[in-house]
Image (cartoon, rainbow, N blue to C red; front, side, top):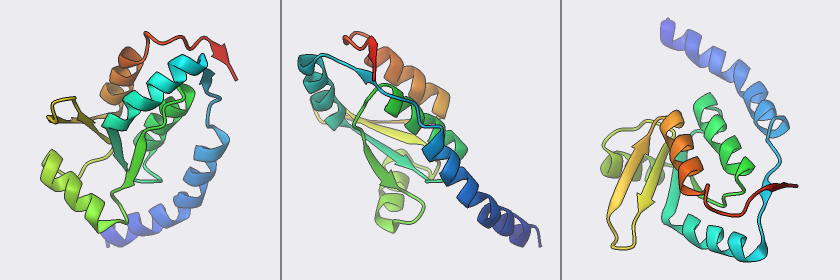
Length: 133
């Protein structure tokens, strides 16, 4: 009975969460072309596993948009391959989860929206990104 209640609640709230995700999306910062090229290159080492309507995932995606970070997204809710990758690599199916690959190929899995946002802000704070679109 409880399971049915939460499924129904999720179905009712889902369109509102998706609308909020679009309408509340922040404008991104503008970097110099050289800096943005470096940011784009650096973002290739990241993958964000997410659920589209998860409020914590939306929060992380908004910060990615604000920082103008083109990080690859993997839908772990509806794509079983991505869900299995998250389980095998990170050890649990919890989103958001940022997969970080270093230059040697070592992979780190970072959970919790606050930690991911803090990591991204710290990681990309050195770039020239002070002009807002």
